[in-house]
Amino acid sequence: MRILRNLGKSAKIFLQKIGRVTKFIILIFSNLFTPPTYGGAILRAFFQIGWMSLPVLGLTALFTGGALALQIYAGGSRFNAEQVVPAIVAIGMARELGPVLGGLIVAARVASSIAAEIGTMKVTEQVDALITLSTDPIKYLAVPRVLAATLSLPVLIAIGDSIGILGGYLVGINRLDFSSSTYLASTASMLQISDFSSGLVKGAFFGLIISVSGCYCGFQSSNGAEGVGKATKSAVVAACVFILAANYILTEVFFNS
Amino acid sequence: MIKIKNIHKAFSDQTILDGVNMLLQEGSSTAIIGTSGAGKSVLLKILLGLLRPDIGEVSINNIQVSYDKPGRTLSEIGMLFQGSALFDSLPVWQNICFKFLKGGEKLSIQDAKDLAIQKLKKVGLNHEVANKYPSDLSGGMKKRVALARAIVGNPKIIFFDEPTTGLDPIMTNTINNLIREIVETMEVTALTITHDISSVEQIADNVALLESGMIRWEGKSKKLRDSKDPYVYQFVNGKTKGPINVT
Ligand SMILES: Nc1ncnc2c1ncn2[C@@H]1O[C@H](COP(=O)(O)OP(=O)(O)OP(=O)(O)O)[C@@H](O)[C@H]1O
Ligand SMILES: [Mg+2]
Image (cartoon, rainbow over the protein chains, first blue to last red):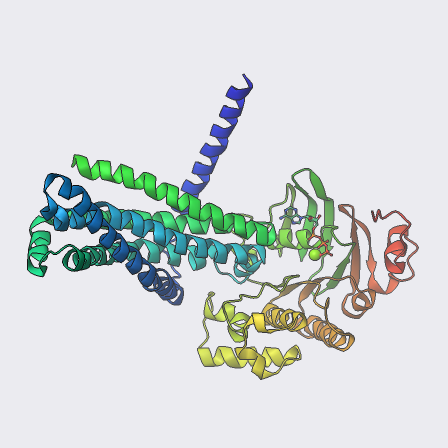
């Protein structure tokens, strides 16, 4: 009986939270196209979230592509199918590893920094100060970040896919005795536009998830440094979990269509 | 005119405000005193529309403060937060002129910078401070920058949450004179929170003592020191024994 009651309580809290987050997302979207827009803040967000994520994303993709080539080779050689390496590396990177690992690594970088930044502003009353200076915190702090993350993640993921394939190529021709021309030809012949496009759509969703988690947790934070730390942690955890869940759901959708 | 009617506010189980009533006439300068934790800052936030009271309402010039969209009453108010609340990603001059750079009314960058430097001078800071970032300032300097930000738009109403806490006696005097000057020359309605009795006498016409959730005493600031009211007597003389529970 007690377990049941506790379960009900937890479910209620969970649903309430979902409700609040949904309300928050609606609030952001309703503020997306109404003036004023803060051009400077939007540009800064694109720079911080898009451009500055490139190094870490590139390195992740490069190493993953390289490792993937070795693994596929090891697996493929068991039934004399070493020649599938280029195709599987390309498809694996573009369809799954590029978007998911890219999303997770950007979540770690961006969701945490958004939550810490907004959380600090919240606990030091800077958010209150914004309001008293006739500036809507949602418009000034959240909208630029959500816009930048949602639009730059697809681009980042496309770049990550390409770098991952490059990583596989480098390992393929240097370690696995592929000739450059066969590797490239085999990659090109197998890849389809749809392999990339699903990743781009996923990217937009992941960007939305990352920025909304960061902003929501940031605005919710209280109790000084400890609260900001908690907000940062929750933002990264929520972003990662929702990215993985969304990835499965979106994969199902693409699989069925 | 600011009407504060029967404000109640509790955080979880802790009652902070328990029926606060006040009336601030236009052009008057009022000080609120009270022990640390009495709820003075909370009351200011309720006046601004930043915190929703559990019961009660506030109206400013006959417009009711809205807790969903506080914008309508806020445009006339200048606020100095207790912790300064400067934007640490922006240099001092952009902090001061934020309203004119990001808010509704726009100024050119040069005009905004000139205006910021002019206001800095008013609070006793020189123009070199304009390009610094808040993290490079001392606590007292931050407070004065925040004060400059609060008065920059020539607001009709100003709220100051401990404007001189952390300043040296000379600067305290300068700031108090500035507040007095603003009140007298610009005909603003001012509400200042302070712990300093001589500041009260210097800047305010009226004073209210907030204690245990209510206004326990209200009167002319000149009468504060001589009041026989037990709350005021204990507060002014710093007695540990009396109606104010200090444990
Ligand atoms: N957001 C909040 N959540 C929970 N409790 C709060 C919150 N804000 C204030 N309080 C509590 O309300 C009480 C009054 O706080 P307030 O900041 O108004 O005090 P104060 O009178 O301004 O004191 P001081 O002179 O030290 O600044 C304190 O006990 C504080 O812990
Ligand atoms: Mg206070």
